[in-house]
Image 1: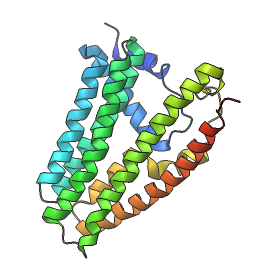
Image 2 (image 1 turned 60 degrees about the vertical axis):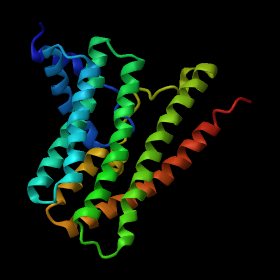
Image 3 (image 1 turned 45 degrees about the vertical axis):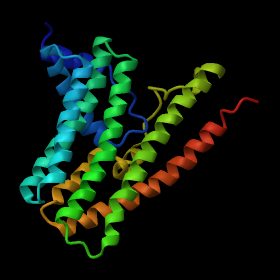
Image 4 (image 1 turned 135 degrees about the horizontal axis):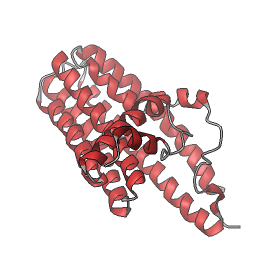
Length: 246
């Protein structure tokens, strides 16, 4: 069995391109996932098993959020579980690339877990607001539904953009199929993408012990994610329109 240091070095060489990735994912989540992937490799886990570990942390946090009255203890617990789930979500792909054991089933499972967490996490916020929140008005109960729509639509539209783009690239040539790993990475873009990063979103749950602050932070992120959604949809539509056959 290779040493952990050797595995980590191999994982560093098997990273996806940093293009289009926020600073959090690049410098926090991917390195954390790399360490977890090395540990999973030495433990003999498969990529799909790592995906299920990610789901256990994430969905456990969702259940706690929906069922337990907000407090500072809950805030730390929910954030820690969500952050761990996100790191394992990075680890499964890294482990798949390291071992060559990835496949359509693993990609499908990963996307199912990701889609489920986006739906259920905002649903849990809605349940918490309804059960424990002292909201200024019942209208605020619509906020998690709007945030949920924005998050799920961004996820599904981005996934479709990638799949349709790959199909068009296969028919017309590989130039558009994937980012060039050697292309320069924009630091400005990486900073600008921070508000849309799931890892940054998870930080808002550290405010659960102060319901007013959590409501404000959650509302601000909902507005920001909606603005990003509009920008992403316009960008992806233009890109896909440019791939039309002449």
